[in-house]
Image (cartoon, rainbow, N blue to C red):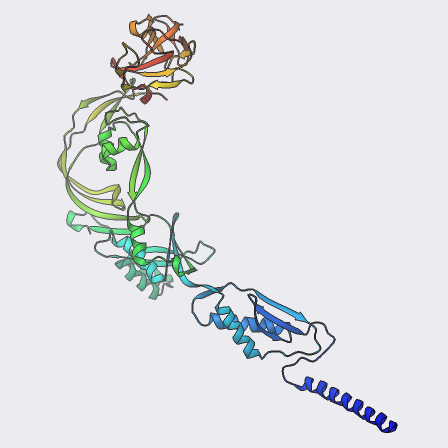
Length: 528
């Protein structure tokens, strides 16, 4: 019995070993399982944005499937597609393990990537003019936008915008050229023609192309209208890829580019200018000019000087257009002003020696325009019906003296003009400017000249009057001490007195006046 039991156990053990060995061998024959090899990591888990999408037996297999999945997503659109994707592949060494079918992994990857698509980028064009940029959906819209800018001034629709490559740029950048219908035809003919002529044939061809010499044209011989057009600024067009929300629709873009914007500008006053003439030149009302220059102009009657610069606003579109027109006019005209220089007068002094009289003439002129503003005129033919009489003006050439603030520091307590009387007996119309300073503060000559008065001046207290070579006079009042005498010559910036509290005052200060023709004016309009 014992012998039988021992034999049974041996058979059972052998059977168990065979069963285990058979099952183990089968595992290696089953499709989808990785065989065991002592080579390190041999089983890889693939995750996209933390989501498990499958397992493979090789790292390169995971990477290849990922590339295929991205291509599959991109192929579904002709736009540029961006995805926010984090691919994670973790490996381990296993004795055996089941890998996923490639098709299954690819399908899972594709679905995971669809959820990571951020935005679709559209093939677009960016148009740049100075600091202004606009993004349009296609090149046809770019051409339509530029054509709209030209058509605003080309009422006969004779000119067409073409896009050309900018050979001066390293990258692929387009720019513009504006051609007339004749230029377009000539360009097409030139593209088809063979220019490789040489020898005698070329010589005779050149003779044919020489234009015959013309005599003087009559008015009927000119071709009136627009001769040429172009953009005033450099236009750049660059291909790009952008999301839909960054594209501008064509109608809005045309409105932005062609609508006139208020652009800050500057006008420098020249000899003979008046505020009313400047207003006509720049097409801005005088009151508006005064408002824009409130720091230097108090009213339309404030004096202006040569070289002074005025702030003006010029209405200009984002994209400006220049054009040259040939035009015929029958017009009343003024002859150029004739100036007679007087070296003993200041530039602020003028005198009309001969009054002007307008003439009448017929002319043909080439006129250059920037948008709607004429910036240049060249007269090609003129027939004077009645001669104009020029205006003759005598003018000074000497630079007038300048004026400086008569004290250092100080706090302005009263300006020029109407005010509430600060103390009993004080004027309600202030004829100067007051600066509060401690008694004993040095007072300086605002401009060089001759002392006309130095002493007591009733309500002014101690005063100093100085006459200047341009005919003006300055006054300094409420002084505590006078340091100059009448008849004395002083230089600009020379100390003439000390401030005080004499006369009718409400506290220590300096009162300062400038008189022109014996009448007080606002000193702040004349101080440098």
